[in-house]
Length: 469
Image: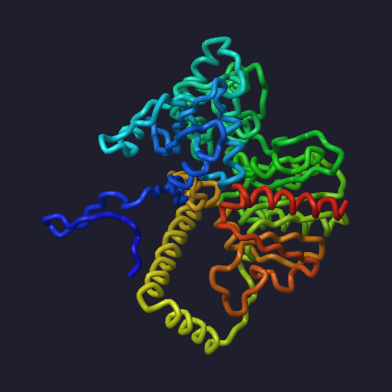
C-alpha cells in the first residue's frame, strides 16, 4: 500500500471528504513542494534568525509561496538578495514569490509555529532595489493592479515583475485586467519583454508604440554573435535567455493572436510564417534556431527549409522534442512481451491505472483536436501548457507532422525516459538526423526552465554555439 500523506474521512453518506495533508507538502502550479525544505534553506542565510513559509492567494491570483522572516540586522536582506541566495539551494519553483520581514513569527500556546495564523498575515515585500514612486495616475493604477495580482499591495514602477514571482498564468491575467480597465490589449510577448509598471504605462498611454501583434521580440538585441531565434519564446524561456552569455543576441518568434494562418494550421504553415519573419531580421546565415517540446518541431522544419534553400544553419537546439510519428517497427510478440513485463514488474493495479489514465488523456486530446478542427476555441487556459489555447493548436499540428530527414548539426537535450520502450530510442529521431548530439539531463518536462537545470541547459547551449561559430 502507498501512503499518499492525504488526510480524509468517510461522511455519513459514504463519500470521502478530503481534509488536507498530514505533512507540510503543498502543490503550486503542478509542483509538489515541501515547505520545511524552503524554511531550512532560508535559515542558512546569515541575516535571518527564523523563517517560515506559507501559501497565499489574493483575489483572482493563483496560489503563491510567501516567506516570513525575522532578522536582527540593522540592514535586513532584501527580496533580490534572498532570491539569489535561495537559487543556489532550491529549484526556481520552490523560491517564494514574496519575502516579508516580521518582528516575530506567530506561535501557539505550546510554543510551536502557528501556521494558521501565518497564512493570514499581511504580505509586504522586503526592501529591494530602490524604485521611484508612480509619476501619474496610470502608473499608480498599474502598480496597484500588479500588486493585487502578486498579492503584495503595490509594486515599484521600475521593479521587474518576474523578480516578484510573476509567471505565465499571472501575466495572462494581467493582460486581461489591463484590457478591462484601460481598454488597451497588450500582447503577452510585450509583457515578457517589458515586465515593469513604467514600461506598461508607456504602452497603455501610447507613449511607446508597439506592434499590436508582434511576430518577433528582442530578448537581447546586442551582441557579437549571430542571434539565437527561439520558437514560441514564452515567459518561461526568459530564465534560459538571461543565463546565456551577454554577447549572445536572442530573439523570440511568436504566432500573434491575429494571424493569417489557416485554422487549424500545420507545422509547415508555422515554419513558413516564422521564416518570413526570420529573414527580415537576418537575411543570410549562419542561423541558430531552437525550440522546446512541440515548438522544436517548427524549428526543425525551418532548419530543413533553410538548408534546402542553400542557407547555413549552424545549430538547431531541440529541448525535449519528440518525433510525433516515429517509424517504430516491432513485432506484436515483442510488444506484448514488453506489456507483460510491465504488468508483472509494476503490479496489476498500478499498471491498469496508468493505462486508464492514458486512455482518458487520449480521449481528451482527441476532443480538443476535434473542436479545433471544427473551428472551436479552447477557452480554459492554465499554466499547464496542455490546456493553453495556442499550445493546443500547436499540439494538433504536431500530431499531424511527418518530419523528413535533416543533415545539419542538431543538439537534442532531453530528460531520461521513465520506462524505455521497445524500438524507441533518441526520442524517435532514429535515422532522420545523422549529425545528432544528445544530452540527457535529469529533469521533469517543465523543470528545464528552473534551477538548477536551466543554468546547466544555458551552459550546454552556449558551449555548442561556441563550437559551431
